[in-house]
Length: 292
Length: 301
Ligand code: SF4
Ligand code: SF4
Image (tube, rainbow over all chains, first blue to last red; front, side, top):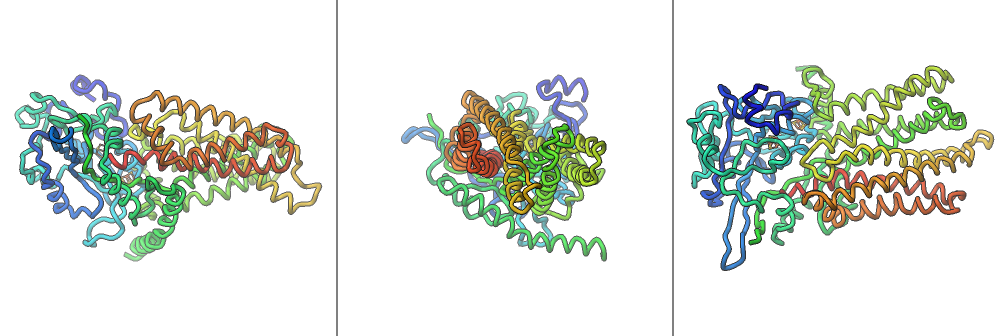
C-alpha cells in the first residue's frame, strides 16, 4: 500500500489482507469506480431494479439491486423516502477475504466480482457480507446457459463499463439519482459530488470502506436494528411468507411466531431432498472429466 | 419523526441445519477424543480402558461430517477446490478448517492404531498432535462465524470458548452413554467401572459451570453492547430462538444436569446417565441459535 492511500483511509489501512487487491480509493493513477446515489432525486419507481433484472435475468426472490421504501412521520406530516441498495463494492470486502477458493475477488479498478467456475456454493461470502448484497442462485433457471447453485452479486456492470457505458441501473434511473464514475478522477461527476456533498455510507463502522455513497441519507432507514424493529405488519408477514415458502437448498430460515424446531427439521429435510439433484450434478461432472 | 419500513427485499439465512449438526458432531467428537487421550497422553491410567471406545466414537462422528459439508455445497464436486493450490485462500477461515478437518481424522486413525498395538510411546506422541488438531478443529467451528463483523451475535471472542466448552461436556455426555451401552454387552470384569463414570460426570459438571459463566459473559456483553448486539440477544434469542436457547440449551442442557450433578443424585444411575443424555442433547440447542440466530436479523436488512 502506498503512502497516499494510507493518508486517504487511515482507519482501514491495515484491512487489506485477503482482499487480493489493495484498496484503490484515492490512489493517483488508478481507477476506482464508485456510485453516488442522490436520495433527494430518487422517486422510488424501481426502474433500476427492473433494468438489473432484465440485464442479467436475475431469478425471482433474489436481487442484485433493490429499493427500500419507508414512511417518515405521521399523517398529515408524513413523507415517503427511498433508498436503493446494491453491492457496495467495498474497498476492503469481507466477502473476498473470507471466500475459501478465491472465487470472489476484487478487480483493481474496484469491481468486486464473482468467478462462477470457481465458486463451490459454500455461501461463506453470503454470511460474510454485512449488506446482504449476495444471493445463491437456484437449481433451475429458465435459461440453461446461466449458472446455477453458485453465488451471484452485482458486478457494477463491468461488461458495460468496459465498453464505455454506465451500469444498467444508472442508465435506467429516471430521476438521475444514480451517478457512476471514477472517484479517483477529479474531473468525474462522482468525484465532484464526493468532494462537495455531505455523504453517508452503510455501516461505516465495519471498516469495509463502501464505494456506494448516499446523499441525503436518513439514518433510520440506514440503520439495521431500526429496520428490524420498525416494519409494517405487512412487511413482517411478507418476510415470514418468504421464509416459510422457500424451496431452496439448505437455507437456515426460521419463521417468527412458528415452532423453531419444526423449521430446523424442515431445513434438514430440504437439505436431504437436495442431495439427489446434486448427486446427478456430480455424476455429470465426473462423466465430463473422464470422457469429454 | 418515526420511520416505518414499508418495503424491503428479504433474504435467506445462507447456512442451515446441516451446519448446526456438523458443529455438534465435531464438538462431540473432540470431546470424546479428549477423554480417549486422558489415559494414553496424560498418563491417567484408569482412563486407558475407555480410550479405544472413545477414539472410535470420535472417528465415527467425524466420518459423518464430510457427508454433511460436501452435500451442503451448491457444487459438491468442487469441494476439491478447497484443497488445490491456486484456489486455496489463506485469509479465509474455511480454508483453515479444511486443513483441520482433513488432518484431524488422519491423526486419530494413526493414534487409534497405536492404541490397538499397545504402543505407549507412539500413542502419546501422535495423541498430542491429535489432541491439538481436535481442539483446533472445534476452535475453527467457533471462529468461522465469529470472523464476520457484520454478524453481531457471532462476532465475539467468546465464540471458540463457548464451542470448546460445549464440545467438552457433550463429548463426555455422549461417552458416558456409549460406555453404558457397551457395559450391557461386555463381561462383568471388562466393564467400565461405575466410579469412573461418576468421575467423568464430575468433569462434566465443572464444564457446565464454566459454560454458564461464558453464557453470562455473553449476556452482559449484549445487554450493555451496541443496538445491534442488544437486538440480537433481546429480540432474536429471547423471542424467536427461545426454544433452542432457553429450553434446549439453558434448561435441558445445563440447568437440569447441573441440579442432577450437584445433589446426591450424582451417585445414582438416573443422575449420571440422565445428566449425560440431557447435556448431549442440550448442547445442540446452542448450535442452532448460534448458526441460525446469527443470520436471522440481518436477513431483513
Ligand atoms: S457489499 Fe458485500 S458483497 Fe459487496 S463487496 Fe462489500 S462485502 Fe462484498
Ligand atoms: S459461495 Fe463461492 S464465492 Fe462465496 S465464499 Fe463460497 S466459493 Fe467463495
